[in-house]
Amino acid sequence: MSAIFFPDNSFSQRDVIKLVYAQTVKDAEGLKNTTKAIGNVQFEHKNSKLFCDSALFFRDEEIVYAYSHVQINQGDTINLFCDSLKYFGKTRISKLQGNVRMRDQEYKLVTDSLEYDGNLSQGYYEKNAVITSINKELKLTSVKGYYHANQKTFFFKDSVRVNGENYRMECDTLEFNTNTSSAHFHGPTDIYMDSSQVKCVAGNYFTDEGQVELWNGAYLIEKGRTLYADSLLYNEKTEIGEGFCNVDMYDSTETVQFMADYLWKSSKNDTLILQQNAKIIDYSEIDTLQLLADTIFHYQDSVDKKNLSIAQSNVGIISGDMTVRCDSAYFSEKDSIIKFHKLPVMWSQETQMTADSIFATYYDSEFREMKMYNNAMIITEHDSLHYDQIKGKMMTAWLDSSKIQKVHIESNAETLYYLTEKEKDSLNMEHDKVSGMNKIDCNQIYIYFKESEINKISFIEQPTAVYYPADQIPSNSLFLKGFLWKIELKPESIFGE
Image (cartoon, rainbow, N blue to C red; front, side):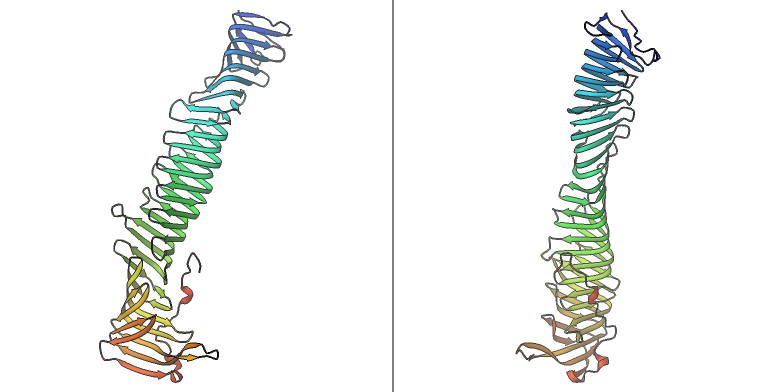
């Protein structure tokens, strides 16, 4: 038996709720203008169909109460199931209760209660729900949420959990677009992938591509490494990442810290590019080694795990009492070699070394030997006026604990050094006083140091020497040609004094 009801003649037939079929139809006792339908009940309203075992139809208000095995079909896209339902025809709002299921061609939502807006094709719940994908491995849960069927978009709030094929996500608020398989989240968020974890507060995750875009501060945690950046891009499939602003990566295996305003990392972390305020800090050394530059390329051999670093522009190196400033540097851990190019300057306590280029051996956390090529000069400061100076075409310096012990000048050697004696001041305190100056020229010279001062000189060939008492030193003989004291270029430690 079927019936059609027209509660208001101002509505077209399409605008009213139509009772299409029921096994039994009668007036509801005690309820004015209300129809009671029982048995395989079916209603139609606009593009929606409602099925249930029994229903009350309030004709004046255009409201249907449906009970048992309730189902709503909206077009060919949305199906809703529940134990009971209130349907308001004038607003097309459905309130579903008990064993609620909502599904389209791609997703299924399960909850205890749901409000569905047929005009917007939007479902809303606030008492926990589980969403699963029909076509792939994906499960989402949250306390509250919306689903916009037309836009294929979920909005989740409160204790959101997402379990995908190769990842798991926990967050406070999430927007998930099913067309693009993209998740937008804000609030504390954790993403767990096969070999890494992301901790952040805002970002996008394109799950099909495995691409993560994060901002407002984010951490990428991998085995042995933790990377922080104000903004972070990471692809879980290629394991390639980029960090922007205040980048800080710590390698706990190597006890090395990488810092910059931009960082690019390769899939196995065997290649790093650091740009803008780039820094590498090696804590494994006895004296923490600091490498500073505008740009640093850092490579690690996949077989022997030895590191190679190339620094470019405004390079600074600090290792204990030894500091370096140059335009570019090359450090090979495998060969224990550091190369400094383009007018490098090195300081060991009060001693400065300069040349067109310097090659150094570095192992066991110490500089061991320096080879200085072309225009080599070593300067040791006594005071603001007096400096010991050694000059030659090529020099080799041997160091111990980053302090110069011996220097060999191989060609065109020139030396200018001061003799000192002890004197007491008015407070009976002893001080070193310059007593005279020696100026010696020789083709090859060996110079031996003690406590950073010249202690002994050996001449390979006959030298030319001149001595001046302190009060007779000519003002134009205080400095060798090419003398430059560049203390203002000395790099400052990241850790301060």
